[in-house]
Amino acid sequence: MPKKNQFSQTLVLLGLFLLVATTACTENSTAPTPAPGEADTSETPQSTDNSAEALQADDVGLTLTDEGLQVINLQTGSTTPLAFDTDMAISLDAVTQILGEPEETGENSECPSGPLTIARWSNGLALNAADDTFVGWAMQSGDDDTTLTTVSGIGIGSTRQELEEAYTVEVMDSSLGVEFSAGDLFGLLTSSEPTGTITSLWAGVACNFR
Image 1 (cartoon, one colour):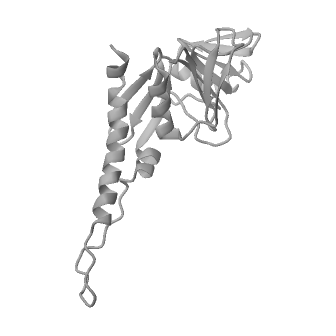
Image 2 (cartoon, helix red, strand yellow):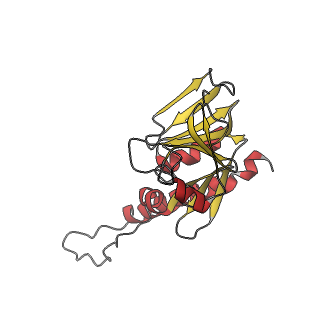
Image 3 (cartoon, helix red, strand yellow):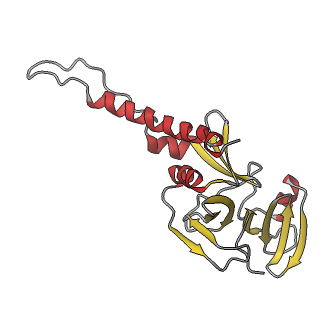
């Protein structure tokens, strides 16, 4: 599927939220003003949750997958994929609409997988791009509590027991530490015990120095 068509749903979804908010604001700002001495018979505007800020905060979510990311409409449960091997500009714009501007964006030319452009957010999410293509993500603990999880609820702080209840998992000792794989989802644990917790997650192309 062409890149542009594959992500048109994401742009339509986010664009529709902004359109609804803009329309609501326009309707409120054009309400007639009563003449001096004339009673205001217009109805008092009711508070709504149609603002772009409210929709982004309450109605749109982002989840981690082993194939990229997913935008979720929390009201309907519908999802729109942001898959690997697609235009980084589109993926970056969609995530920015939900999480805000990244804290930093820069290139790491020393990654073992090759040079990567990496965008990082305060919640610990990083998107990796190669040649302007979204190729991977990584998740670590961040400065705020808006941590992301998989659809199964697995994220930073989940235990090995919780991980194994959701996925078929292989755990191994590596130069990175106690490493695990769950299909094409990878990460590190504080220990191999059932109570060991996840400290990092990644999928796709990562910048890990082994």
